[in-house]
Image 1 (cartoon, rainbow, N blue to C red):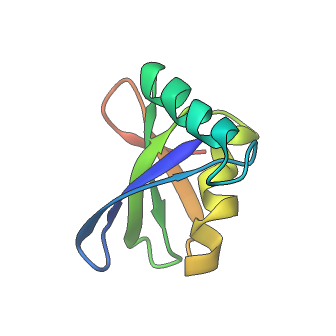
Image 2 (image 1 turned 90 degrees about the horizontal axis):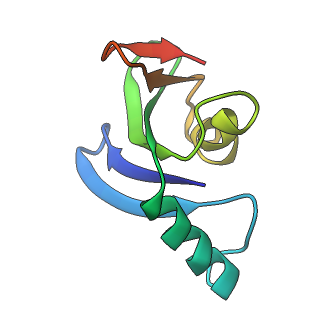
Image 3 (image 1 turned 30 degrees about the vertical axis):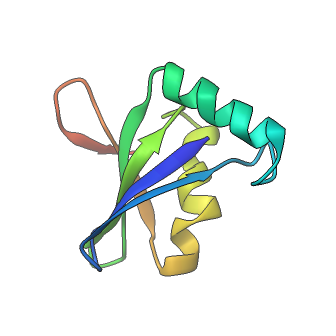
Length: 95
């Protein structure tokens, strides 16, 4: 599961959840949100080919293959070409 929290192009806050495990609006999806909020999260950002940051958010996984879910399910539709996660050094690292 992941949550988009910022649209950097439109400069607006967001709070939209996404999951490939359950459909939005279902009880299962709501349970996934509760679990997501209670567990560790990883900050990510998605960029376009010019390296402009389009979206920032949180994911429950920062490893392959699930760490690509934000890019695959959301970012590619809006022209994002890569996803980076904040590492323990406080630097963004491309997945």
